[in-house]
Amino acid sequence: MKPGFTITYEYEGNLYVNVTNRCNYRCSFCLRHNEASQGSIYSDNLWLEREPTKEEILADIEGRDLSKYRHLVFCGFGEPAYRLEDIFWVIDQMKAHGTKMFTRINTNGTACAIHGRDVCPEFAGRLDEVSVSLNTDTAEKYEALCNPRVPNAYQVMKDFTREIRKYVPNVTMTVVDTIPAEEIENCRKICEEEIGATYRVRAYIKD
Image (cartoon, rainbow, N blue to C red; front, top):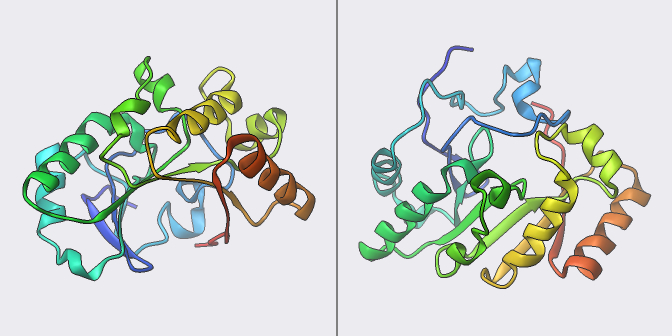
């Protein structure tokens, strides 16, 4: 599939913002590697010919009828934390323009590692929800499943999720329903009992 320039797209009643294709993981279940869908399950091509500027992102969002959507979700066909400063700028501009909308970021939880500092306080007053991919119940399985290019990635992800709860009102951890039932239950305990976040099991989307 040839690169395109889809910045925003609709999915299940939300407006998603495709901010980057950069990623520090290579998850075995990721749609980027799904040959049947050529890297995208959507009618829009999410492989970017270049990253949009923060101004282009803002203009694309505000060009939509935002009353149609439940959430504004910053994601990307990659890891959106690479564009964290630009995402914050966009949200700040929307607030300055009087735009009120529930905002969420879907992340692998390595934002602090990407930026080399504790970025969690910068989320305060900006994001309404942070959704972190937990994926599995042990560091060993996580390494095999996600192939992260981050040292000690499983612990980094859990530490981020625990810390971000201090600054964001809604924090969710997710797994995909392809893992065994026992593993799903173990992940629930990690999420709810160890981290104190909301747990969600996501359905696997084939293409």
